Length: 510
Image (cartoon, rainbow, N blue to C red):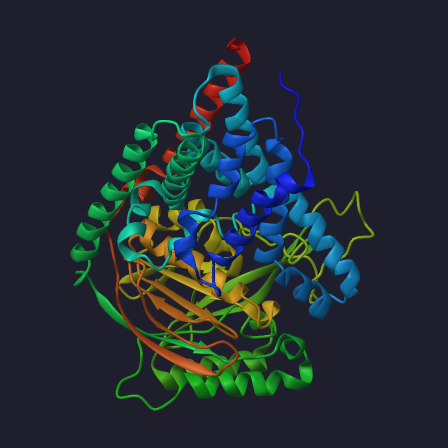
């Protein structure tokens, strides 16, 4: 095997790629750069194959993730009480670990090429998607802003997600980057143009756009039971949310925004995650206020609240969503399944008792017992709480079990005025497209939004403002191919990558 070497100067293309990958996501939103962001990195691999792809990937991946999730420092320092220098150090360490998901596909493609002669530009899209899928479930998963999410505003292109999920978009983007990089490398080295890569990339993107045009036209006037909703954004600062002295003001804002004068009451009012900063099930005084609001409004109410259950080992706490009927009766409750590590629970706490949660509150949450839909007349609501909306497979399971409308209640106050609320919204868009469902998003401090099954954002609020956002949506019943088969495309990429690596191990070209 050839000796690998990478000098600081040779890391420049990797750092350029890392910098471009940052700005393709909100709020910079230069999503057109997604189609060339990996070109410097790939050209370097083609031009100098002896330069370590692992170090190239670590350099690009670390810079990319620092720019992407820098808001972690805000959450840890402002609300977790972690000193800013330590928070910054933890961010760098986290991003160095996440860089493995960039370094791994680069290494795999390089290794396969070195051993079998198969072009890097043909195998990298497979390896990239395989790494993204691994990122979605390994160590509970952190699929934050995968490459495909950068195109959330390109309505025609993203329709392919109802077949392949977001991974199909990542595959398209990496394939296009590979074709452009191969052309540049051929130009620099005066070789024949890479006809294979060019035709393959153009065919993929062209087919996706044609399919997208057809799907967008189909959903201009969706059929099904229609209902009205009101998304309430109370704008409660995180440092005041759990302050008992501010509880009455919290409820006043919720009640006021929910009962604003309207021609007709909404069928459904939606409050954000943990909207009631008390245990709804065990505070009769405050519970009566909430029930009274529902009865006066004539609307059903879906809202977030902590809950608890007694067990043999003691009390278990949950991050829950409650549904109240118009008469104030509790019609259903869903307990959050996918919890945030170090936010809602501490992993391996028995082994590391000195590590505490970053979120102040009542104690570690427990995951819910399973998926539960919340009934609202002729509509079965799929309630996804905060972070859960970034997991395609979880959202898909809600729809497979009969969810006809997606609801995402969240509290993005933790992020402050960073780009994270905008990033969170961009990922929610793809859940609507994958399953062809309307999505109603109620956020404490924003961004609240109404998203169509095509991914079009029909209405949205500003962050850190009080708002009551009306919506009229349709309960959808279609099962997309993605809803039926799940992440088959991603798993096929994993299997193809594994097969190529196995073949490469057994074979070495002269």
